[in-house]
Image (cartoon, rainbow over all chains, first blue to last red; front, side, top):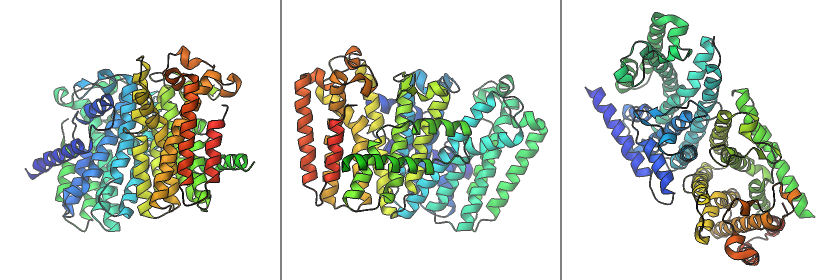
Length: 292
Length: 292
């Protein structure tokens, strides 16, 4: 019960923060419309939830995390806009609505993504905490989202899609960067803001790594046996697209066993924290238990 | 003489800094190749030169400015890569070589731009100065390059190209954001690093504004009467493309008079500084005197 309440509350918090920060003033209205269109498309807001969950775990006010949470969601959103472009995945629909470049046009979508990415750093720099912490946040965010993180993972994913026989190691490395890096950063950022000890911070990052892999394995499993109406895409689309997935490499049972292992390791990291981590355990359970 | 020496030295400094910072490790080699291809395409490196010129003006070591200078050039470079894309200006050639998406492919060019932009912030966060200054630099850089600065200017420029009869005010506002904002930031960043007084900092920013407009007017004039071999594009291409320019709105003589006014105002700002600004005056002279 508490679990559900927190999730929707965190979602509300970041959505309110996003609409506060995303002012219309001093920018072309078409750019604002395109940015807002994708920011308001919804989604689970898992990255912001991780930030807020860490803050609550350490008894800190959620307001401390608004800039970090909103900037994370802005960068996640820009990555979706650019991934959907014709030159990339060429998707027409996301979350039941036309993708950004279908709703506006390709040039606007490219620029809306660029603006979200850039504005995210300006917003992060305005975080009301010590300058030392802000610098640590910016450095970490840039590494997680850049050539050695998310963007690098996206490029390798694109190259891998053209190949058959991608080994497990490569698949894991792609996911660690493409989706894992921002999840790990969300936890690290929460730890920085909350003044967590060095060892708690490392444990939270390790938790994030296992969470990220678990998230991806679960995604692949859902594609095999999920409910089409809930996941919003055709079940079996990965296999049809000849995509390398955990079930393909390990078999469905093997993938489920790998998921269990990641969850166990993630829980062990939480157990090692100096604080009670019920909220983060609930978030983990939500991620691996989700049916969409 | 000194003028030329400094310019080429500053260019060397930033190019050395770029190759030091732009390490191949831990990123897809194709991504590194694409980023490096455009970073090494050359250009006048005016933004870094402004940073270094301010540091020299205040007697500070150039090494203090490497992260700021290199990150500026990375953001300038990303903006050129994205501007050249088929959905934007659809250019095949830049600086005599195939544009990034022609040399690699569109998806790689989009991601190389995204990576340069993101990595630029990570690099800037590593600047070896006080955390207070780093935060100020990141905030200012993000504002200058984002929706209210460069990206917003680019979008309005795109919209303006589809219209005829763009008024002078709109033209100016587009240039102030599309090219001016990063020039002003370069000067502000130099002032922050050099510990310039508040009033010097404001004067340097105002200098940057006039320099930016002067730069653009000169660009438009060169398109009318420049030497094709030197400017690397066909003279008269703006008119052929029905582009709104200063000569079109003000006439060629009017544009030259406007250029003179901007230069006079820029020089007045330099004269108001607490230090002797010969280097910045020389840079201004280079910008407005350039024949390419």
